[in-house]
Length: 559
Image 1 (cartoon, rainbow, N blue to C red):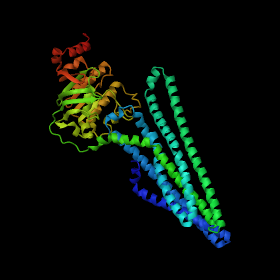
Image 2: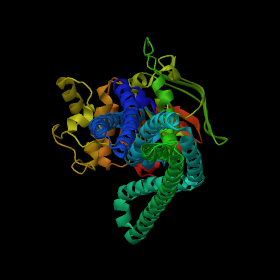
Image 3: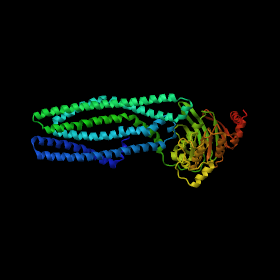
Image 4: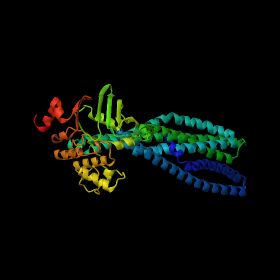
């Protein structure tokens, strides 16, 4: 999957392939001419020796230039692959369903953009190109050796098979140690994120020493696993070099025997010695490269999982043609998780422009039902339609413009208040001013929001979020416990403002509703255990529903 990034850089890949073919060819030519140079020296042929020496020097210069070009092209290919991978990961994450960041693996996703890509650069992208270079070098060197002397070639090949077999036997040890290190590093990154996110909580409950101890263990385990991985790699490399040295000694000794028998010259022995390096080193590099690629398989699978998670959501781009606005209709919808019905055959209709309040105990299914309106990944039976069209037919972009879902969590970026409202969407200044006035936001639009929202109050932060929701002029806005953490006065002000909005349908989920505003809702919906148990106006429910009457008595202080 990741190799495709090299193929996309075809204008750099083609010259790279040509150069990595030419580079070992020059090396082989250098060995052959060096052999002639030594034979000329033994024979006392000064002219031939000088000519060969000059050619070898020119080849060395050309070889150095080629090596520079190969490294430059390789760096460009790796840079493009790294940049494109990070870009694709970010794009797919942004277009994923919101559930992707509601799971406990968010730390792993953050690690994917930092540690994982750095590891992939060295152990995947670089390794793939190294394997490619060494395969070509191995083929060229082996072919040239066979043309020079088949007996020496057979000895080199047999020795290489033995050497590679030994390295292959111990490769699993090195791969396993490296895989453990990668997992430990990923866990370390996730835990650091968790600890820093919970910084205030840690201090509040005086558990700094406990967390410091856990960090020390994580740090120690990670460094220990890295040391084990490095030692395993050192062991394999040392073993490979030892086999290389033994093989060169055998080839040299056998070459001397052939020379004593008059079958080859001393120059050919020198060439064979050099070709040992140019055959053994590529073969061992290929093995190590493959081991390196296999060692990051878990990272590749993690990225593939991230891509697959977003695939369904990014697949639909064609907008659905919509006629007259008829609102949101829920028909016999059931949501089942682990054989338990979270939503149980619910049917209801939310009419355009009306204001709704949904009340229910924790776990009644309020949030689960409303999240379905944003086309989340949760499966359900039944039908949900927007303006008469099945919600599942809407592409993500179009649905996001028509239905806005806001919960108690507000995320701000380190930028101006204006950009936090617009989120870089195009909007006329007059329209922005109108929205700001509507939500009652008095903060200067050019104020820069600092990290952690420290220079905005909770009420101001909430008004920024509501202003965001109005930019696209949605048909329906869902406020799921959007004012639950605010003080009474601010909560009343925001709830009243939302009820005075004329255009969108407002679906309000809250335990913190104001009794003074309750009659402004067109309909109040009561939920319990995944069912809609009753609905109607305030006066209707007060008259017939004991549960609703009890809630209102508690809110008004009469209970």
